[in-house]
Length: 126
Picture 1 (cartoon, rainbow, N blue to C red):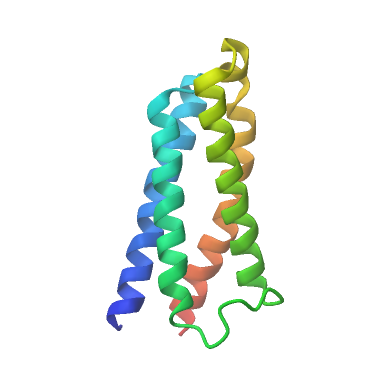
Picture 2 (picture 1 turned 90 degrees about the vertical axis):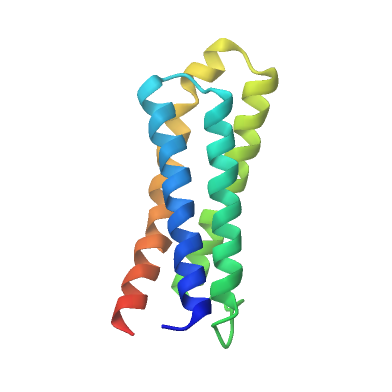
């Protein structure tokens, strides 16, 4: 395995750790806290970095017609929207918004898992 493959897999796995920690701890507490937002942003940044590294391995990294690229792009945009919304809710949102935020988080996380698992399977198959 070359260094770029190792780096991209590590970065994407760190995205999984941070994003999952943020989503699940926020869901279990049922109240959005500042550190959850930090975990969302950290997971997003690791995902962008890992995606960039993986793109360097591809002959056509922007082929949106390829299912993994398409689901990955959708997941990244949803993660970005999720992190921005979480930031807004923590800074200016009401207490009820903080309590209801977890409903959206799990959906974004599940969608994010599609390209994560797909990429893992592609990596294992060669």
